[in-house]
Image 1: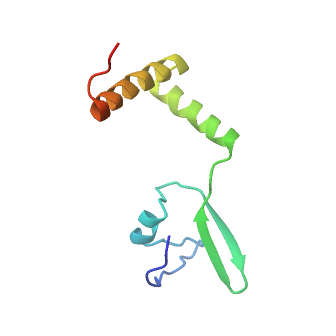
Image 2 (image 1 turned 135 degrees about the vertical axis):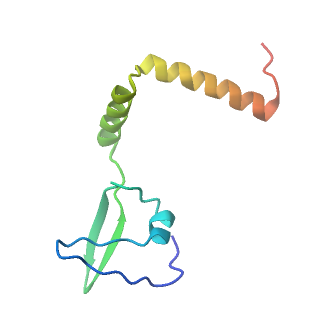
Image 3 (image 1 turned 180 degrees about the vertical axis):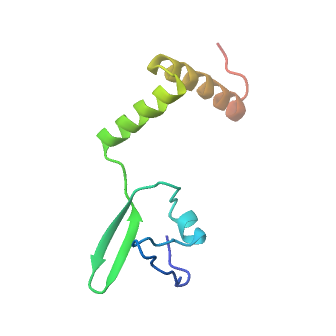
Length: 95
């Protein structure tokens, strides 16, 4: 994300900082997203906290459980999506 211009913000009494929408959009920061804060001299860097592999697996299991999906359901859905994408890109699949 290139810095187009500086932004001003205020830190609230509990240490909360509102990141301007334009910056959140450029950094793909959604509501509830975890961020990494790195002190650098008298400045700070704030960036998206990338999920580790195990954390990503846990998050996928949680999402699937909440949606009532099994791994088999997910794979079947992917096969259907793959077929639709193939047809959109190349026309009807020859079988």
